[in-house]
Image (cartoon, rainbow, N blue to C red; front, side, top):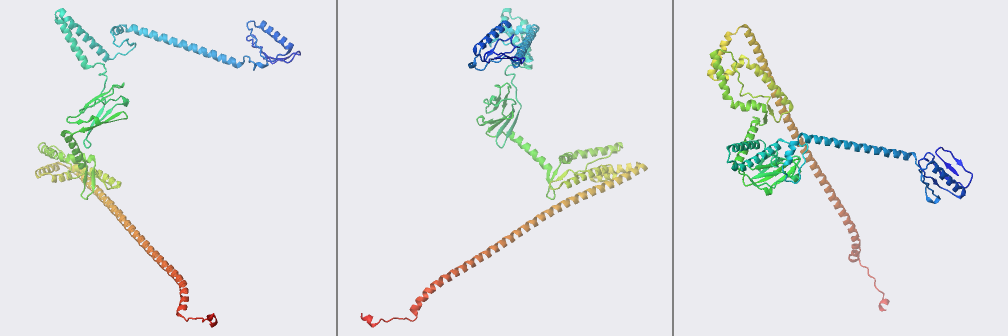
Length: 562
């Protein structure tokens, strides 16, 4: 018999058959489960009874002994360290659950205390609200709710309306006192003012008008409307209220309540049955076909708009003398094009006033006048020119601007401007310039010389810039002409090559045809000769028989007699 324990000690008993007893001494005071796997003979039974008595003495609280024979299956294992760990984990989880329940209970207690404090602070308001009868069945709890100004205005108006009704009912009893009537009228006026300033917070006051755009398509005869309905599902958009004279879009089924009632312009009627609605990216596009003709007022507005657009195009785009399309920049158009014709008379009037002031008061003022016939070369852009020509034109524009600034401050430019003025103004300007020149002395003459030199340099620079620009334009045109000529030559060469190819191909075909015909003739002659040789042999034998000498064989008399 073998006894196994945790201390790895084995005891051998010399009596009886071998009995395996699995037994944990460390668990002996706490557990009384013993598995006897093999028990045969008297000695084994005696040993089992002995051990049972020892267990009863050592642990009187555990009296369970399990005997399992060889046929009872696998024996039950004793408690191990793994079971201990599992028990410890279960105890830990139970502890965490208890702490969580305690925290939840503490949180609920804190919330209850806060609610009681809030009820104590605004108990009067809640009593007034709860005292009113509610038609919805049970009263709604509104602890900690935010009261909006619109709700306060609504409650105030209800109170005023109740007081008005009560005062109206009590008027006959009091004999129609003037004081009650005055109070009622003031209350009504206040209520009307409140209702005008802030409407009631009802279902209709919460409805907003969405952003929308309107357009009339004249060619297709359609009335186009775009309504911005963001964060609204399409199934909550209602357009069933649309009529022939108004478009109605309603989303009151959704939390975002929009309502658009858009009347049609005067004279326009639409067909709501044929209308098309498309909802994409939060925008509802409504296409309403127009019934009948579009009103003349809308047509006139459209014609005026198209005319202004065409006018802008004609001012910006024009054909030059050489037949090329020229584009004027918007800056040049605003600086020289529109203002030049409109403000020409104003400029002349200002020049006359300045000359009169100079003659009368003797003030030294320089008369500046922009040249009307000279356009800014840097502002004109030619459609067929390259980037180099544009850069040269811009440089020329800058040079001409600088030259113009220098020229305007020089006396020679004044003389040039005098030639453009009327004869009377020219004489007055010449006399004024002579007076100023007489008053000038030595230092002024030096300044004049410097101005002359600067003017000459500016003129030379302007001429050089214009010459270079003209040269570059001419060079660009020559380059374009050469390109066109090369294209024409290339096309001619291709046509000549294709013609040669066609001719050579035709010659090859003719030669092949001739060879095929000759071959066919030779084969025909050969076959005819072969056939003729065979037929001549047969015909020669017959001819020789017919046309040649005939040989006859005479029969003998004896044979004849026989």
